[in-house]
Image (cartoon, rainbow, N blue to C red; front, side, top):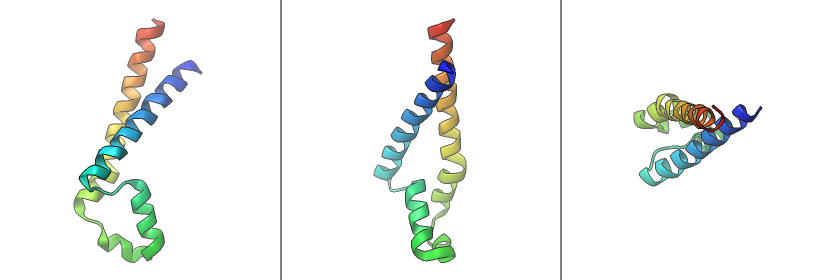
Length: 80
C-alpha cells in the first residue's frame, strides 16, 4: 500500500509540473484537448496541431511513466 501511495504521489507531482510547463510553452493539455472536443465536437480534432497530438499521446504518457520510475526508486531507497 505504501509503495503505491509513494508512486502515485510522484506521478501526481510529475503530472502537475508537466502541465505547468506545457501551458507556458503553448501546447494543449488534456483539459484543453477535452474542452476543445466538448466545444467543437469532432471538428475540434482538425484544430489540433501535430505537436499537440505527439505530446498528448506519446510525450505525456512517457513523462508520467518517468514519475512511476522515480516513485519506485524513492520507495526502494526509503524502505530497503
